Length: 486
Image (cartoon, rainbow, N blue to C red; front, side, top):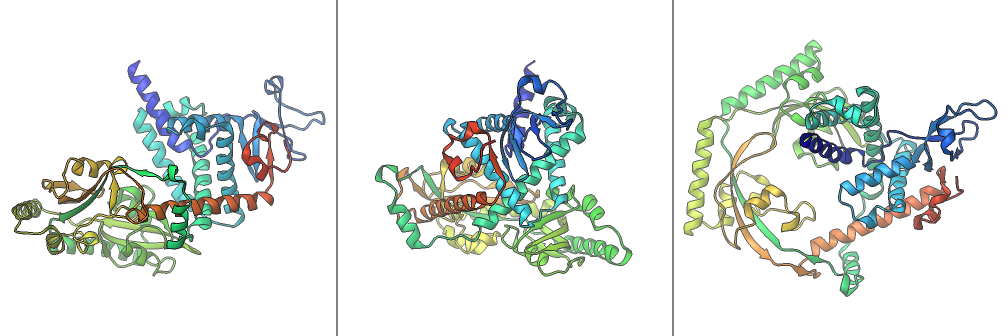
């Protein structure tokens, strides 16, 4: 019994991440095919196959909360979304029926206009994501049949189809929202005005923070291993170009990129996406059907094929291989890191100089090993929000203290050795413009993005087919949306 309860909790938690984008498994709405109006039904009507007075068959589902373009939001959608929001830990004030309906309607509106604007997402990528989700769920509870049964679906194909619809809608909504906000920026003057507009009692309190630097020592890969990988990639490239072999098959069988291997090495990207420079350079320098020569990135060696170019988006497939690192090279890297640590501890080496001289991480070595918080571009990391792995390595260190040499493996399995130093500790404090400018700028940008989204929603709601159930006309946001009640 305990195992069953635990599995159920895992299942709910896992599904809440996926179904948060408005999933209803048992819809019950009545759609009038003649005028597409949606009408509430009583309990008796739901118990029989519904036929109107003119003999027209209507689709049977449960009460409708709203219609946005071609999308329906049912009462059971709202219930499911609310349960998911609670599972995710959202405060009660953010998961009232009105708040939930507003969020769902915004998602539908973005997805609807993504279609209207002919924005495209990769169907193969979404299907690959869907299959990965199903694999993850099956691994979590032991059987895909349990998931099908738990959510009342007929079979695995029905569940996959529903998941695909959710992922497609979410991807479309995200793409449309990016079109609205991605180009927004805030100036220093806008940031200052934003900060000055915050009432004194509402100025944010930032928790304990750290500034951290690191030195990274990586094992040296023998040249013969690099040559072996490059030769193998060149051989695959020739086989595709000269013999018509399948790039997809080769990526599926041989690529060491676990994230894309199951989808045949597929990625969809724009120039704004956070892929490494070498990957983006290759993706946007080729024509459709062309295959790059082998190139190196921090992840290993690649060949890349451009499958389709769609305006600012490009679908690519790639094969990633890692040169083999010998145990001898790993031992040498560890010894080097230990020696650097001893020299730092004795004062014979200064940390910044040692990082510039010896660190193998190009991203940080020129700044003396200084780590940058990707969330706001500052040097500070709030302890309460710090990456768990980094937190466990540095939270006990005093200002100016060194960590031990730590063996690390990245997501590709590459080994390195790291030495951390806490360069500054900042206790909890009320935000001030001078010291906390990067974080205040990020807050100002978020506010500007929210306002832009609200403006966009208000404008688009005017020329989109939208209907409300009359129960929701009391919601504060309804006045910007409602045209006529259901």
